[in-house]
Length: 113
Image 1 (tube, rainbow, N blue to C red):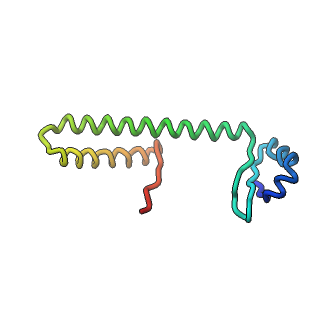
Image 2 (cartoon, rainbow, N blue to C red):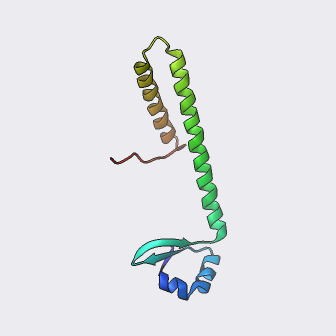
Image 3 (tube, rainbow, N blue to C red):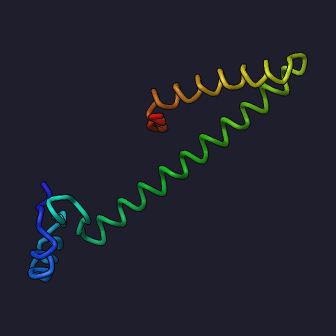
């Protein structure tokens, strides 16, 4: 469980907090009781960065697959109007996204408008 400290405490005890971080712990630095930053080991930061980069690559690959699928659907359905082809591509794309989410390949939050 991360330890929470105020900005003032972090400033006053920074060296001691670095020792705590070196032991594999994280520290949440709060200002006015609200989280503002996290102190973590560089190794932990590298792990987070690696996961973030991998997630971005997976999302880019998923988008590329969806775009190829959309092109394939459009090419196979030349007898459809552009609106019909777009509607069909959208339907297939949504299903492909749902399948990837179900397999845990991607995750996302819908816009809350």
